[in-house]
Image (cartoon, rainbow, N blue to C red):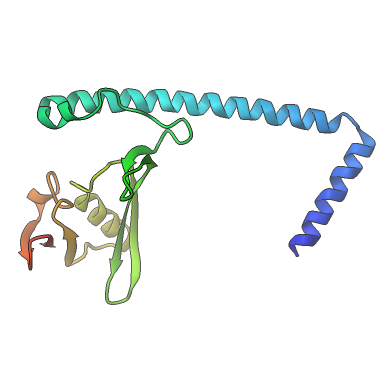
Length: 174
């Protein structure tokens, strides 16, 4: 099936070149122009992301001066994917990435919500996840099992949180 589609596409391209020998160079030129436009668009997005990161860093400098003093001075934005944020991975490398949150119904083993963010940590993401679940299914879950950072401010004041077992996990109860 794929082979037939490829054969049809190749035949159409050969026919086009036979009719118009300049078609290939026009197509190549159009591809280079499109690539140039896309690069400029990504650069503009990266500039905007960098401005946002600088503003976040300046704000964080006032609330967490000791933490920020240990970090490098200038934030970075990715030209490849300006919406991503540079994050440290388990192997020690720092790469452009996203933080993906997944909510599942454990009894059924079904994913009920997915949320992607450029935030490095989970703090404060519990409430938006509960709201996404409620918006999709018409009701909030009765219980959540989340790590200790996830329900942090501003989510925690809206939920009663009780420690479970070793304190590394908390149950958030409506």
